[in-house]
Length: 177
Image (tube, rainbow, N blue to C red; front, side, top):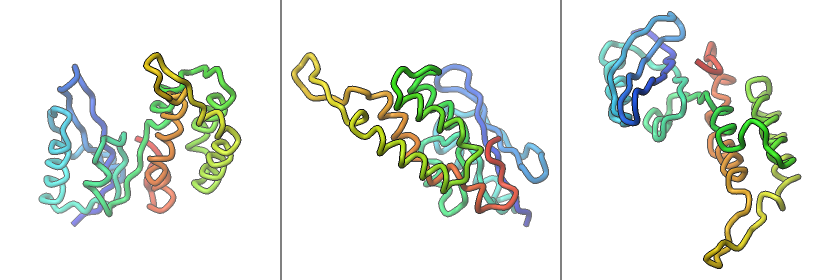
């Protein structure tokens, strides 16, 4: 039996076709690949193959494909591309102070410890809570949050916080792939 740390990434050609690659971070070798249709079952097939080959999956570094962390539990799971996900919601040059601060904090993600990042995120949320919770009446007369993209970026960080710092507790786990 051999311990591995899986680096997983997928390249897509079109919306529903791509190839997923599993690479061992310890040996730096590619160990499995598979053409996929972006389904969780495709990833499960790779994990099953690893187990059948006698590998012990110590941890996984991936882009956070929906449902992957739950599938792997209790294996340590590290998400990368978080800055990209936040920037997609905020843009590269947010106009609001809250957006600028959240983007700047996201850029520090790989430089800060989990405690420092969580504390800074909490303080940012506290400073801007009224702005984040601002509501507007839409054309149908319904109340909606005014800053939906900012709220979404903030929620993305909050929802994934448990998977952003696995590298702190697993020896030799890369922060990203």
